[in-house]
Image 1 (cartoon, rainbow, N blue to C red):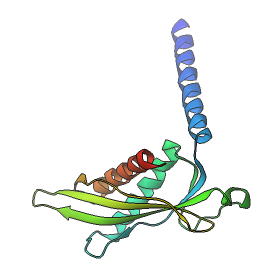
Image 2 (image 1 turned 30 degrees about the vertical axis):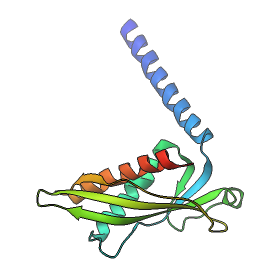
Image 3 (image 1 turned 180 degrees about the horizontal axis):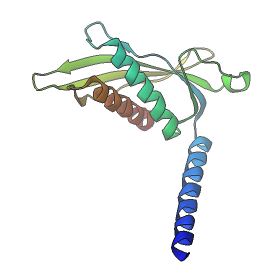
Image 4 (image 1 turned 60 degrees about the vertical axis):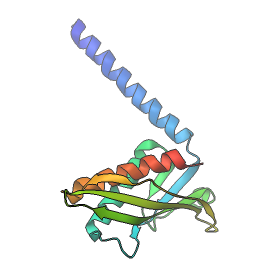
Length: 157
């Protein structure tokens, strides 16, 4: 019986910590809502459309987990009037993608954050080049989406 009680206490503590961490992240969100636009690519970048969609999905997922923004909505998503004043738009453009013969590539992304209401640019930066494994587009997309979320968190003023 003692063993079960200690497991129950441990599980309860872990749950409480995860709830408090999530609440703390949302309380510290600088912007209430972010609309994540579909990724675009520069003219010379050769990436499949599905890979761009997968990067976008992973980026949205990681931004929601990190608590950088209060809420993360899809491109063209509905935002309530109460949240619209503090809503921003995130646009990412892949400006470089190169792959060598060993299937190791590099991705570089230009990130722009602007106000949703007046479209005024808040911040723009270019990420450092990210080395990625290009043997599997799905793995490459997940790594790039995760990398982008980390870069946005680091660079957000």
